[in-house]
Image 1 (tube, one colour):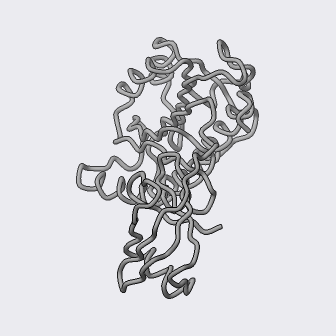
Image 2 (tube, rainbow, N blue to C red):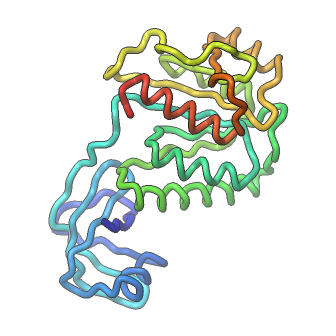
Length: 245
């Protein structure tokens, strides 16, 4: 089922507007007409059934006829604290992690991070990540946008771990695979932060700082994984251990 994004929550009986490329898609690709049924979502947990009322060159007017809460939020909020990787890999991770249903995306500047974006570049990357997340939600059927946070330095990311029930740093220096998560049972509401390194991994000093801060160190088994593959594997494993997958 094709869904279209709207910028804010809507009430039954109100008129919402589909604009830009989505409006063109409705008109010229799907060839929809006034009176046709269409599905919308707001990225904040609500999905809407609407009826197309008017199709204009750059805007489609839709009347909301019903609203349904999306059931996919889960009981566990996962924050991915991802060391900066090359642009294409970060883009792919935003798309795939949105599909997995993470709560929060936190880019982290570490000692081995490539690239190290400036403020102007950060703005363009944030806009691109939001677009990627939006397109991913359209396709995978989830109802919640991940929070896309501005990049922070490693030390600041460690400080943010205080807001979580459990924080794990993944490193290829840790031989013990990830097992049952301490202090969290399946089905419980919990906030979990996963810290994943750049190409080349975290430095020994970064790992030591994380352990000193109280993070749990874990590995992903004997296989050598690319940085982006490790992030997806870690996320899926944690979701499985917590009954979310």
